[in-house]
Length: 152
Image (cartoon, rainbow, N blue to C red; front, side):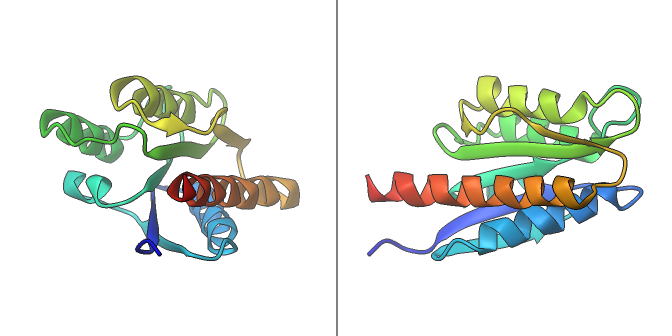
């Protein structure tokens, strides 16, 4: 039997909407047996290398990704943290434009060569009941994917 599979959810939230999404993603991931799920507001680049899957949550501010998330990914890139083949996904809330989750997904896919779950999950404003269920499904999908890949 392999070690416990680890999934890291890193998110930023200013109004609380993306935090609600993060908690629902966590709930969905934890519904899959054999997955250790950790949710953080901040992570060091080295921590990305220590997990089997990474889900990033970021709201869109002024058509862009927040600085903390940008810095994390830039540092991981500079340190040449190897994420190739790890499972990745992104989510976030937005008010009018909503680019951040898609931008993050592109970075995970193209820069880090991760096995990403597409499309990015984007929810306008506060996630409703259906939105929260979509978040749980995203967490479950990522957890099931790393479980399946560990068996091959």
